[in-house]
Amino acid sequence: MLAYHQKNFLIVDDFSDFRSSVRSMLRELGVKDIDTADTGEQALRMCAQKRYDFILQDYHLGDGKKNGQQVLEDLMVDKLISHESVFVMVTAETSQAMVLSALEHEPDAYLTKPFNRLGLAQRLDRLVQRKNLLKPIMQALDRGKPTEVLAACAALCKQDPRFTPLCLKYRADALRDLNQHEALEKFLNAILADRPLPWAYAMLGRLLFKRGQVKHAQGLYETALKAFPMMPALYDGLADVLVAQGDAKRAQSVLEEAVRLSPLAVRRQSQLGKLALANEDFETSSRAYRNAVAQGQQSRFKDPESNLGLAQALISKGSERGLDTRTRLEINNALGLVAKENPGDQSLQVRARLMKATSLLINDAETAEKLTEQAMARLDGMEQFMSAEAALLVAKQLQQLGQAEAGASMLKNCAEIYGDDPVVMQGIAKLTDDPAILNAGNAAADLNRQGVRAYKAGGLTEARELFRGALLLQPKNISIALNMAQSLLHGTDPKADAPLFDECRACLKMVGMIPESDARYPRYQKLRSKAFDQ
Image (cartoon, rainbow, N blue to C red; front, side, top):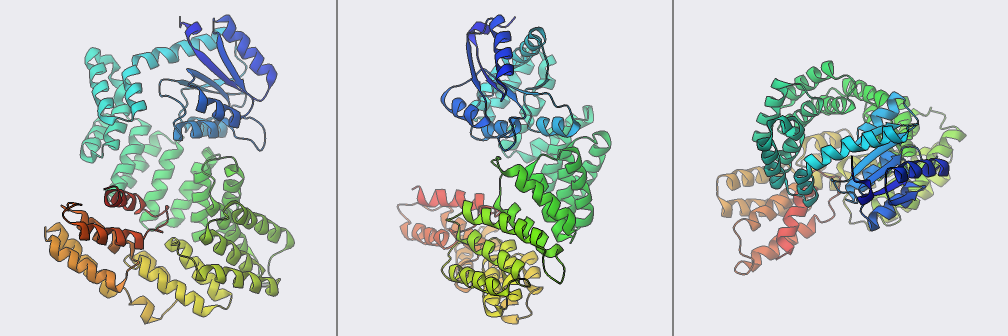
């Protein structure tokens, strides 16, 4: 039996009687160090100050408050809980949607109320036995050292081959974190050849998709779902693959099934809303975004894009006579939160005002005009880059609001920043036929392609000259600027080649307002770190 007197516990539940009951059970087991919390926020504050061996976390802590799933998300992302700790999700609810939503975030165990002291002790003993067995792996995970994780797994499997199945996912995660993609693919295929495991299917599917093997990934996901139809993550992966292949209709259907199985995931609801909006299924879109907004209130995955998406879906669903009072009120509330909660984000302030102006265009043209003027005043002095998707929507709204010149200016700016992306240029072409906008980036894109070829062939000097020429034409283009920065940093000594480092820094400053949502943002951060931390 576990030496409970040496362990500390945190009980999180909004009912004092339950906290007292569990505390009594633990006292009878010999536990001396027991803390309690009645809200998720209190639990997080306590975990920031003290490391707990065990956390018994109730799932539902009251309406309008963080639930157990959201507490676990925060603990993991903010690293407030050790991998050696035991986190047990406790709930009286046993619905499929609740259980799947809770299990998606992989607590150590899921415990259903009511339970007695014997049942609690048996469950805790089994969990601790497993954690103790895997202790070297847990400690390596806490240190964030994937190489040490692999070594600990190898040592444990050598000690006793029966432990090999316990180490599979830890080994796969470590290979992923080390970017050893070929080794990971081989390892996952070996696992699936021996025994189909849902997490292995999901990880291999993501890897194949990332490496551009889209059709292979689709077939894998479809095979996996036949064996594991209750795994929402597999539906998520298949939906991403289908979107990449241009099959947005089927992708929406797949994601709807994932939401049906596990509806309490904020990002999944938001993704469904986005897909349905693109498919002009405004009813499904507004419902999904509405859920994302409601569920996101207490979540770290709360995203103003869900509010903006909800407003856009409701506007799109409206009739030619305008929007009814109830819909206008919902739009106003959603956009009001964006403006209130993001006072320093000029992009969001502009977008919220334009969205509201668009919603009032038929019913209240005077207010719509004032809001448009406010948005344009902020837009004039804004240095922050919008995402391509947001910029295209803003351009479209400006056109709808009678601001054709401002709309054209937005499209021109979007083409300069993102013009190397053919999907973005297709979006711009839907809003304008102006050749000055549509063809402005052709020469720069051609120079950029030549620069990439020269760089890969080892012609560093030639590559730099080509990138410089491209930047003269489009100084805000993110891809060209990052390519230029990388070429300048390649083989450069910060002391001997100070002018090249200065040029690199100037390049990165030029695109320093890249949105964090941009897929290239991690690359920008990595290059910036190399350029400025010298």
